[in-house]
Image 1 (cartoon, rainbow, N blue to C red):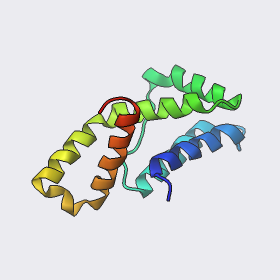
Image 2: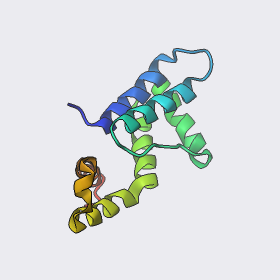
Image 3: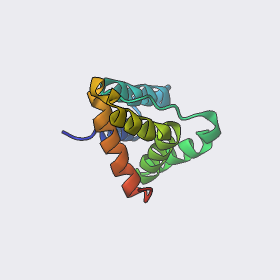
Image 4: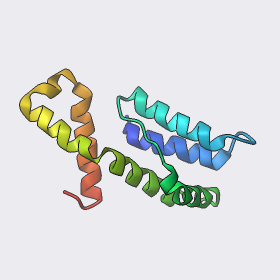
Length: 121
């Protein structure tokens, strides 16, 4: 099965690509994105107003068929918002607390892979 993080990116790309509604596509896309995250035990993502212009630029590129900017944007925002999760979860695993939260171990592995890709071993 594909990583939920990839599933959320694909769901966002689909909502950007097809624009199914005359209004509210962004809200629906963000709701779908957070639904996928929550269904898989991940914290939600909130692109804030500080990054709004970059978000809209990335969506515009997606409308032109270039999805790389939206993928990179969402990964960067997600990592920035949740960068402490990796370290906190590692501490819980080492202390034995993580056994009660099996999704945390999967989350750590996925964040580890993302950090490796981004050169942040």
